Length: 260
Length: 377
Image (cartoon, rainbow over all chains, first blue to last red; front, side, top):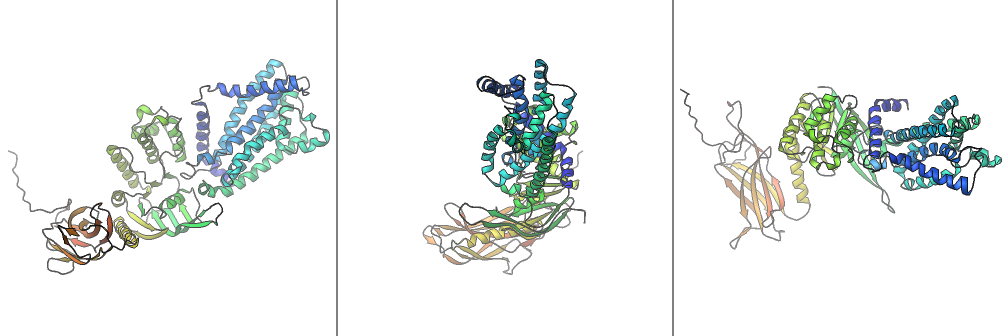
């Protein structure tokens, strides 16, 4: 694996140009252009706010609901849109992979980098909103860095696994969007973890994404330290998954061109 | 010998063909291929479609792994298996040069100067900031070609991408490829254009159904390839065949070297199975493929019929060929469509020339000639 990582580092300029290309492709030729990146999440925020602060209120500890749901949507969008891009990143480049060799993990990794770019943008937007509502902030925000790192590791791990599986089994490309839709209900996006009954909460937090997202929200808007057990568990699982997924990806890589 | 740049050791590649509801079928695209190649060599790959040439290039490019055996190559490699790999239609020429270039090893090395050189080579100075989707197919092929031949590759893999652009651009391609060859870049080339194999390659490998059947000079490989094609045609079972084709000199002795200017060709043929009027066509070809002259006998003419099978003899006089090796190629053709029904080639014979000339002859004919000069006053 050390050799693979060295090869990836040597190919860093391919990663860079590839990521840049992905970003450019997304923003050329859509008439809304950059506005799109704001309008899409804004739609979700409005919808959730109407649903869960007016119709079926969920307890949010006095935090303005739009802000509350944003603190869930930011990591969720990162995970879900990255994975749904990454799952087809190998398949969609069927004209490239059999023609020229480069470390293939660059394709899913590019999706993750694009996702991180969006994430940073959303975080800035989020911080601006927080300033507006006078909620959260402070030096605790530094803790977001290791949380985001774990989140990125988890996302990359899942991206590598699903992208590779999609080459070997057709169903994967269909199943992943469905799985993502279900997943949204079992991670803390529009409700706080605390509404899960205490005896189930442990199982609920077995999902590393749930524990990372909960920690993210604690730091960002509650100004409270997260559940350290859940957070360290979530990070450990994320990095372990990444190592496994990368090993698995590289092992299958020589066959990619023949599968397309 | 110079440093090895590409080496295949007992390389085989199997593709598994999956069919729903049926057992998997194995297809051996390459079988026990073995060769090595050094700097500055240009290796031509010759053979019919599906004989394994493209698989060999993919293995050399590292995009697919051999089923058994080892492939060793130097880095960096510029695979031109397709021009403009990774081009995105919505992005400009400039953006696409960046990405395509980094894939071909031109990442940080892509300086402003080199970038401009690529654009100039592709003759796209005015369109470099236009999205590639507005390019004509020739324009984007030119761009892809330009990037590939400016990469720092020590091994260039070329799959049928040489006939890009107009005549002038092709001339430029040839010059650039020649320059790379002189600089010691190894080039492996697949082309169905004999011209490239014959004139650009230093060596050629002939493939037949996944096996390497010859590793020799380009001329030899092409001739062997032709013979195999004819044989395959004969075996395809239309029942029509040309048997032995023998060439004799004016005196009736079998020739290796032609002294006079007449030859006699004796042909065994069998056209009994032909359902339509046929022709017996004799062509004299120089070894490099140049077609010199011909003679035709019609199977049926003005009510007269030639025997449907037997031996034919044709005498060609005044055959003033220039120095070189020649073959006689005999074809039975369909009189209406001129489709070849069967073909056979003679053993080569040699036409000696005036060896005191440093320059050598080219062209087809040797004629009686006189020079005269008048000095300028």
